[in-house]
Length: 371
Image (cartoon, rainbow, N blue to C red; front, top):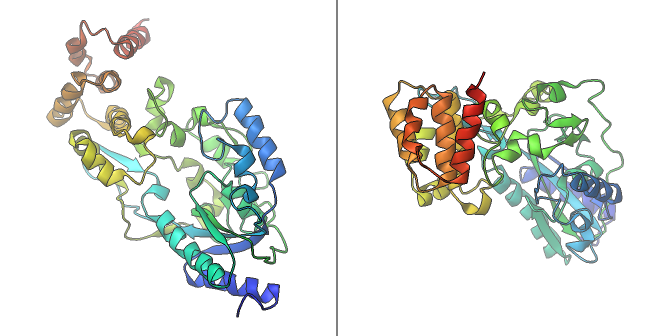
């Protein structure tokens, strides 16, 4: 089949090529502006719901208009790849959990599969650009328009047969392909388990997430981890799956379980003893603000405060190391962790520390103790 064949047959050929390459779902939509999506992105950004998040919010005029990324584009081939995850129980000792989408190189698999489709389009004389994990496109709206799934109340796209255990991406092309005939109807109905199951109440309305309250964003954000959500973070080192775990379609269609590139559980003491280079080599796939390993350590210290034991010598040695660290952000989070495991006696090492971050942390701790 070549690009000179009937558009419907050529489109079907491309979709089958994508499935054979490993896409769990694939469809086509027009490369037209996502006008309503742009308006909604700008509204949420104006209200601060994006919390400074850049992804798709940086330039709504671009992320909601595919032709800005490829002038003359006519179609989007949109694909989804499912997770392969490690569902093993936590090992002995303080460990942090990694969200399921970050356990596997699923974006690599998605990029490879869509790359096959892109290569075919180019071989047939068309221009094609891959948009995978890219803030140049609102991939969920593209997936909805391509008939892959519907918006769940947790704002994820739910794909029939896979739920939201997928990552999304597209091939933008000037080929005139046949779009999906029908959109997937809403399958949530009256269910609100994701809203009620969010540990911080970040889903403030169906399909609307306040990133300022969302653990999955807060572990990626700069600065201090908000005190009001440190206990809620629990053992989560990177990401949060709670709104997906409670979703009925996801429970009916559980994610695949198998060998992954990244373990589900990370030894937080080992992480806290690793060098910057070691941490970026191990976890460089994750979004880390400014590629600064200090933010991985910040998260690990909060996790240690939630799952560590005050009578564990290794935990105490690690906290003592961070209570005298050169980085005041880490000293402050170590202070919180020490108090959280009932070892406030360790905080005496901070006497005389004039760093604003540490002073504020000790003041907040003292205020919480006051009757």
